[in-house]
Amino acid sequence: MATGTQCCETAGPGYGSPLEAMSGPTEALIYVTCVYTGTGREKPDFLATVDVDPNSPTYSKVIHRLPVPYLGDELHHSGWNACSSCHGDPSADRRFLVLPSLVSGRIYVVDTQKNPKAPSLHKVVEPEDVFKKTGLAYPHTSHCLASGDIMVSCLGDKDGNAEGNGFLLLDSEFNVKGRWEKPGHSPKFGYDFWYQPRHKTMISSSWGAPAAFTKGFNLQHVADGLYGKHLFVYSWPDGELKQTLDLGDTGLIPLEIRFLHDPSKDTGYVGCALTSNMVRFFKTPDGSWSHEVAISVKPLKVENWILPEMPGLITDFLISLDDRFLYFVNWLHGDVRQYNIEDPKNPVLVGQVWVGGLIQNGSPVVAVTEDGKTWQSNVPEIQGHRLRGGPQMIQLSLDGKRLYVTNSLFSAWDRQFYPELVEKGSHMLQIDVNTEKGGLKINPNFFVDFGAEPDGPSLAHEMRYPGGDCTSDIWI
Image (cartoon, rainbow, N blue to C red; front, side, top):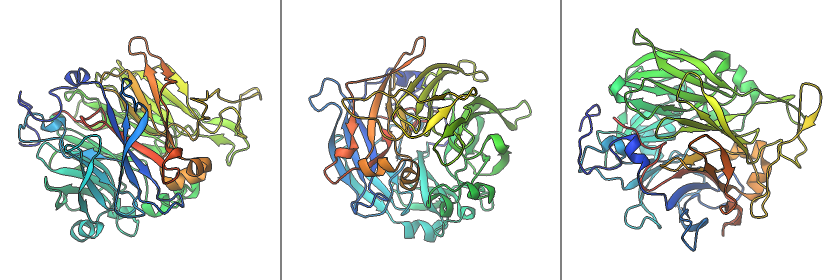
């Protein structure tokens, strides 16, 4: 099936449309990447299976752990071998979860079909094979393509230079095919990407040079040009770099990027972490692409911190499958926000909940208002647990009514900003969502404590449902 072909009504994976997906089955399991790399615990990272069925006796518990065979990987993001982009292909099958290791460069392929509650390792793509054939290292985002191939963004070369970054193609058997982009068309920096085939476009974002970010965050590295502020617009599916959007000082470190789910739409958003802006990108009448700041989170004036002002640090966001709501996190401030984006140019804040952060009650850090008064956020205990770290990765139920939240960003950054997280481990929360008027409320009955793991406290990152979700699936 060609990348640009329309779906037809056959029994391929996923759903025929985003709205059809909203009527899919309620989630019962969720896979979570869990990290020991960088914690000082000499244990392999693992994929946790968490029971999220409220009618199950093991609800809100880790029911299986699949350790990877090596140390030092730093599991991070994940994607599928096939998703709704292959819905029109009855031979395609959503079976394998692809787990790129951000630090080691290994790519694990996990079989979730034999036993969805207890996935098993299917294949390991070795970093030497990837580098020898493509020069790529530091793999990050994985998306399946309608062609059957898997595409993985890679953030640099094996020495951690951003100049070596680009896009890896694996075939349906997970063999290295080569680079996706045309020679000479690699981006300046790499991170996330999303494609919208009806507009023959893929857009990628920019974190920074692996040699910089793997050592922790250093503000001087931003001034030194080791972090990105650009979006890279490619022709799809042929990999020609058509346009580079310079987001300037309002768009420093643009991370997660998503188009609206409706494949006919020519707009989307990118979360710019350091400047804490949600930037909207859109197609202009002449066919080129432009951008504007859609939401801005002001830095907080603070006391007892490393800087006099604290950015929110937007590190993840997602869009509900009906394109009505956008959710994002402020990892340092500690809040999760819900915006109505029915008018994509003018998002409206309709929900906010505090679930951690550096300024929560009891923290040595305090925020200061313009008139000099100090304040802290009121973060509740859940099942007797003080909430650690800040909200980082999020995942939304297909029907849009439940938002899951983990709190680890990347082990080196966790250690720098939230040392308690490395010491005591992550946790996972569930937030109930009002999808009519807006509103967010923590579910007190759900709490997964990754600090209580058998091998010691671990760091929990990305979440995936076995049947796909709003950050894994793309419609064509």
